[in-house]
Image (cartoon, rainbow, N blue to C red):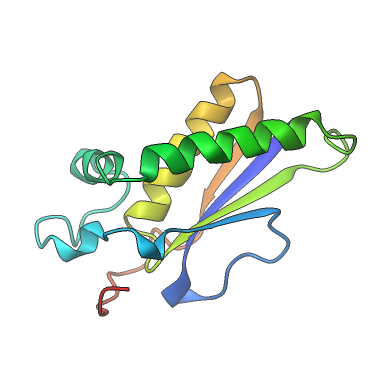
Length: 130
């Protein structure tokens, strides 16, 4: 099955229209709160490690893979790509890493995955923790 994953930041605009599954990671502790990670992005190893260690992320990834697998077994699986949107406050940390990890897991299960980071290039947004 073809899958499109879009990571995004809620503070940069609304969630992508038409996503079949939307993960809202604003309830998870934001690596942005750690000054040593604030200016880094989801492409930096320190951020990847921090997100992987976030309580609940592993379970969310497993549940989302299971949900995508269920869509893949459905009657309309081959008609249109499944679109998964992954958002956090600014997208520089949780959303970007989670989208990357999700794409990697789904590819390992034989899916064709296109990954797009909508807001990763944007500057750090200073905000109160959600």
